Amino acid sequence: MDMRFTKPRRLEDGETLDDFCSGVEVVDDWARNRAPYAKKRGSAIVYVSFAATEEKSVAGFYSLTSHSITRSSVDGGWLKRNAPSSIPVFLLGMLGVNQQYQGTGLGSMLLRDAVVRSLSAAGTVGAKALVVDPADEGVQGFYLHYGFLEIPGMDTMYIPLKLPE
Image 1 (spheres, rainbow, N blue to C red):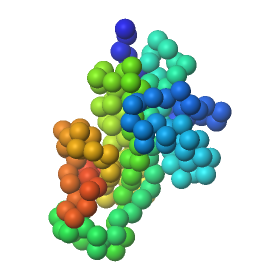
Image 2 (tube, helix red, strand yellow):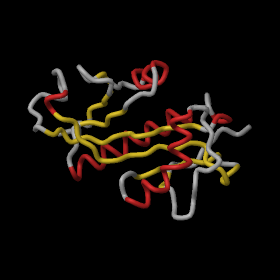
Image 3 (cartoon, one colour):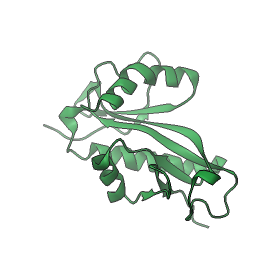
């Protein structure tokens, strides 16, 4: 099976994730039932990728939204240092890979794309980090592998969005 995937792009009007199945109930429920509404309401942007040889069903997706973390909820560290009372961040709300494509590197590709888009947006509107709330320890390990750090006092993880000066 060819394991090349399309560059992630925005979910388009009329497209759905009805057939998406990652095997993680919370991700699948969000993909099928909430992604279209998030797009319609402007509360999140959903990016999708397809297998290069089969562009009918979504191979993987992620969502990004603006977000903030209350400074007082963070116990310390880089994220809190010199930050306003409401720390501007981007939230990687969901990231999922269809079961048939798990283990192919697609999740890593989607995460990399989310970080690059967040870095670009942070250079325009300002955000201190990309944050994620991992579903479990296995997912937490995935993010740790790619450089995400734990926020002291929270279950949330982050990666700094520092642009070169």
